[in-house]
Length: 224
Ligand code: DX5
Ligand code: ZN
Figure 1 (cartoon, rainbow, N blue to C red):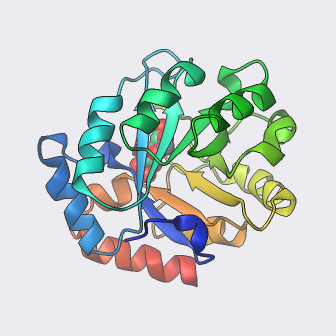
Figure 2: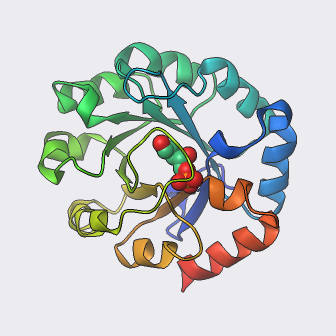
């Protein structure tokens, strides 16, 4: 269990609770933590920026009460500035906004910095690298989406790997590269080779019949 993922240089696994059973969220988180999860990724969706609705501050608060691990919120919402505060107040330690949702990413990053938590920027697979450049120095995390955001269980899109590699070259030592979507024991090695630090995994852990083995196999591959 990792409370400050920025204090480590090793690759880390962040299960996304999107594929967990919400009726027993605490037990689900406790189990994967016991099996080696480093911290948790929280997918907030508003049914507007993406065609799916997941959860908001109430579930973030429930997750916070269930673990001491770092909580990383991925805001797939049209109004990140409006809701990042409540998400952080509920217990998220980072808030990552989509560059496609805002008109001025640098201004958004500056605004979110005022909350006092870590700030990330993310982009859809089809969104070019140049769009995030104005905000690159103002964020702690760059999250490269390796599926079209909205749902777990989609197929990994290897075409995002060159973009991830290019971003990694431009990051400072205190910034982290995260990847999200379609990661599993078969795809994480390619992400690792592109320079990914943090690996978000939902279905390949929570939907696996043997979660312990799934985590161990992913861990082995990311350390390759
Ligand atoms: C997708 C979400 C992801 C998702 C990943 O919109 O941002 O975090 O839960 O799910 P898997 O690992 O199943 O692709
Ligand atoms: Zn996500």
